Length: 398
Image 1 (cartoon, rainbow, N blue to C red):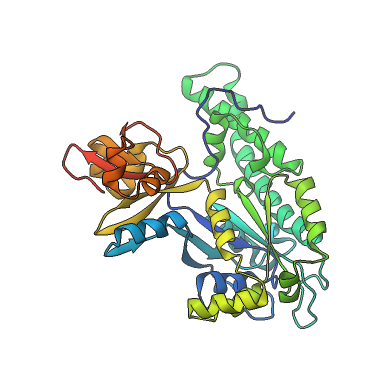
Image 2: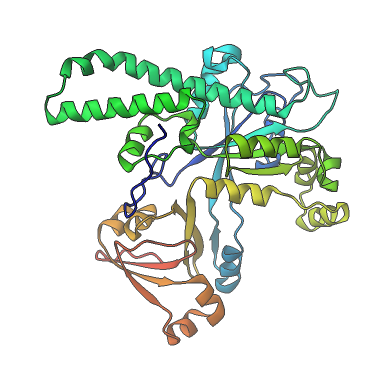
């Protein structure tokens, strides 16, 4: 039976770490363009050679999250300091078939995936005899299946290990026992349920789990519980003409196996060419002449959103800053991003809605129009809120 649906009225507990400092890993087979993509999107210089396992140790970098609201606030306040929101991206070495059993240094690579919170799954969608394919020929659906099967196999093995280590003790408890025993039995039963779900060929993230089940799942750091955005690496020619023979096949596979997941075509070769142009004006000119703007802003925003992240703003003459937090966070959780003392002694929050501020043209005009909102510390902060935290200790942040 499939997992039970979430009870209506409950506050949904999200899969994944309850943190604002979340990371997304670039995953795929060797030689599909992962490191080229990483180098271009982060302006890094990770080796991107034409042979398997060129990348061994994961490489981490941060990229700014594009936001026109942040740009407008900077133009409005003209602050001395400007700090946008960031997304942390990690380049992970290529997986191969059998990685879950240790093939191709697979255990180390799967451990790297376990340490991230979301996945950019890069799949190769171009033919090039000069770029070796680890399986000999380009076949995207086979490559997609390979990665997903390895992640599921690893999750199944991890869950089986837990079950084998605890089954005898659970059986000894019988039908009675203490409150602690009942808690252990409930956790064991959830783990068995999740193991059966994954072993049937389904990702954990595609199940409907109760809050109690999600809390137990989150303690296992399962690979298939992580949100996935698919990035199809096409040739520069195909990207610019917006046509590629592999894309319909990839889209069909996603719709059949992981409905709802997003697919974004990009060209690592073309993005690398644009990334090499340092002057923004010249870069935009080249992109306009070729008829293909960079898709990186869309990829970054999509990855950020897939992690259930959003940001709020503090704005003034000294600084305009975008602060990252999870969707559904309370004002106290948001304030804790800035300083624990502010969160611990928070009294109230002055909130300006971005659209209201933009329409009014200034803070004074917004306040005169009665559009400044006062919120309590347990209120939910919303994406794009411009806030002033009022703290009992006098440590407020505007």
